[in-house]
View 1 (cartoon, rainbow, N blue to C red):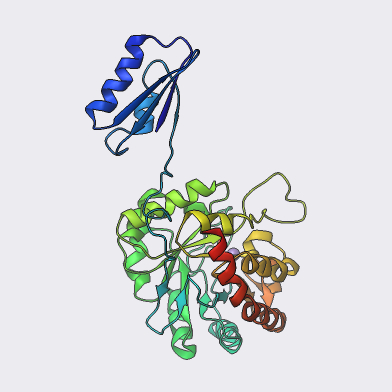
View 2: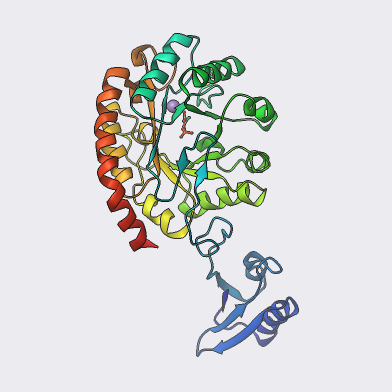
Length: 349
Ligand code: PEP
Ligand code: MN
């Protein structure tokens, strides 16, 4: 780290910083400028954190050179993480981007869910997504059918061969959820629920971690770090739009640039969710394509057998016939992109 001392910092204050760092094994280089003293310190930041140094009197600023995420960082692991499932499906690296589709909430209608799952299968998608525990802004909104919904997910998976994804909101549900589904999702609202991150870190299921409503990219990667630090390396990031000043036409602002940025700084796979990213059915296709063009490892799209009657997020869900048309065009694009994706990822690493 680089420590910039305040103008007029005293010798005693400077020495105190140096002593703390040296006592903890840091190599120090002192640069005394006309106005500021700058201390270059190289060593292990777990022994002295930047926060501890910046708390010392006379310290103006502490700059950290290495990114604070380690396990998630490309510095640590240069090759892409590839997550492989028992049926051979792979996410990440140069593998074909995956598609995760299904209703926002699994409803009390197995036949409806199965229609979506069969359409997903027909269109070559790999995953069925469906919420059993729904985080809702209002306590009066539908918040999911819980275990019953997970049973439907498992049944649909058995009938179609699709892998399944569902959101976990409470660590107490984890063991039960792991009996039914293949991938755990941490939703945008729980991206900094550190106890939950720790709990999924101890699970042996892959985790989709959604970007928080107001997460910076660094915070997002640090949330992934919590999961990895607790023992689970199989994290799939998901860009799902962030809150910004303009929600007149879109629910969120999709940060498309975050995808190549994350690819540059992290080896983890990242997928894109244009349903939550835009909140608009007509924007799903262009934004899914945009995400894939800049290197996303997959897409997550809400599809409902009757969106007008959906218990949540109907407006951003595709009805099945439209889904099939959209997915056919997305499949054409992913075919064409495989070659370009290789070139793009080679260029940004
Ligand atoms: C969802 O995937 O249904 C969901 C609630 O997403 P997010 O956490 O991104 O809002
Ligand atoms: Mn939803």
